[in-house]
Amino acid sequence: MPSHSIGELASLADVKPPTIRFYEQIGLMPAPRRTASDRRVYEPEAVARLAFIKHARQLGFPVDAIRTLLNLADHPEQACGDANRLAQQQLAAVEEKLSLLASLRTELSRMVSAGCDGPAGECRVIESLSDHGHCLGDHGPADSTVRS
Amino acid sequence: MPSHSIGELASLADVKPPTIRFYEQIGLMPAPRRTASDRRVYEPEAVARLAFIKHARQLGFPVDAIRTLLNLADHPEQACGDANRLAQQQLAAVEEKLSLLASLRTELSRMVSAGCDGPAGECRVIESLSDHGHCLGDHGPADSTVRS
DNA sequence: CTTGATCCTCTAGCCACTTGAAGATGGATC
DNA sequence: GATCCATCTTCAAGTGGCTAGAGGATCAAG
Image 1 (spheres, rainbow over the protein chains, first blue to last red):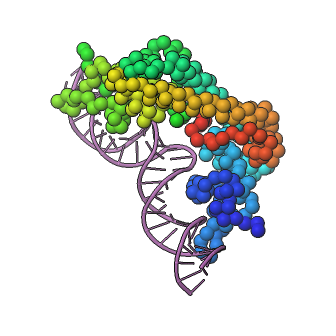
Image 2: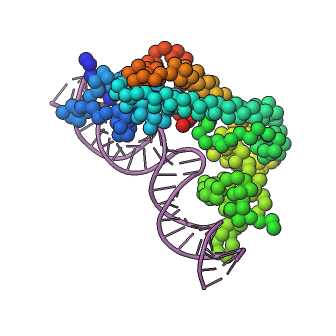
Image 3: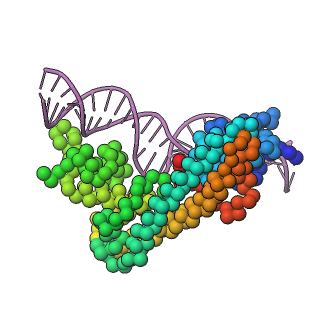
């Protein structure tokens, strides 16, 4: 049985069906053929393509970059300079983020280890947040760092 | 002159005026009094509050957590257990993200250092993205990691 | 009095999805 | 063949944390 329903494809690649439909909508996954009752039918190639996308997303590549990378994967005769450049950019972005997070960890662990159990008026955590002064290494913009 | 326009407050705390209006809208900053011509007028306390918010955001605290922390800062007689808990959660989130990013960096730098200059058909970067197999340490969900 | 900076509100856009509504279809069970 | 529930379909809206733009009012300086 070389073809899959959207649900099968989803579980093969460990994503959710709506995500696949979304990737189709934004042009990362090609529109597959349909059954008589309009259900999507995927050929085995779709598994590899979806895995490629998922892997690239896990590595933090933005969708636009993935589009470029998929184009290259689809046209193996083209030069791959773009792929190298994108990977280098992504590596630089990851390294920048790593050093930012490292300084966040430093301050947070200082806050946590100074922990208190009295009233909030004497709370070290709140105090740390109020005084940015003693926090020398200014940890850049928060942008897309970490949500709890 | 103990009061500030929104622009002054913005530059004092190094945020943009729309951000302050946004914080007012979501209830992080209280609605200030207005001039006859409806312009916002901030008292000096607003500077500290905005700095607190900015600092917490830089540390990656989500807005909901900041609301809780501000409540504690506003009511110093309450117990500060929540603040400790939130800081610990945030520290844990940061540490998880750090280890994730470290493994991303490993794979990306492997991709980059294997770099190629031929056609995409032989591109190591594309190849790496296609084969998730040899990438043992599975780097979790991408969620809010890094955009380039 | 004119200029240009700043302010106001309101709406929409960003990213990469996720969630939900409302309904059609498919396969398994009675 | 009837019932049931899982799965599928489309479309719209929500998420977080802002940012950007439209269209207009007001202010301070020259």
